[in-house]
Length: 157
Image (tube, rainbow, N blue to C red; front, side, top):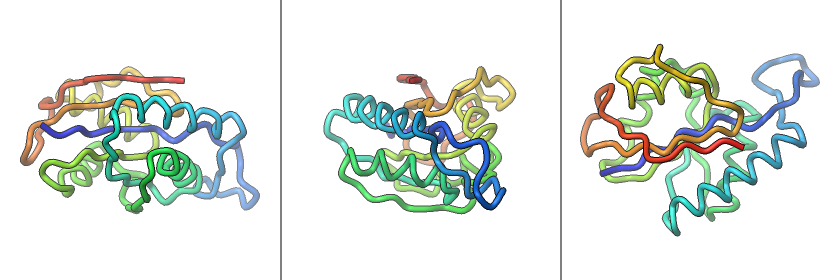
């Protein structure tokens, strides 16, 4: 059994200096949220360190780095996560090792729809995921199909 963790980036500033969505940074509230999410995840994982994959967008990168610093890991970036559909994000997860615990840091609507796809079998069954919201999903080894995940934990700040 593998553990896939889906984390929505922490609260971000409404606008970046250059006006681009991609470069929006975390707000102070977001930095606190990300730290709380990292602490909650550390307790859930009980010493295991996940492989961390993040969107390269500034707010996701900053969230992932705060988590990585607390867990003692590094962050890998995947551009497909930034505006990934649930299917694209499922492909990113499926490309990881067969027994790995993997944390994906991304954006709505993709992350909340991915959780619904994994657990409910359809992406439109989502119930919302706040900033720094985190879902821990147990998935079988091998290629994961929609609806094959079991929600083990959900955390929100």
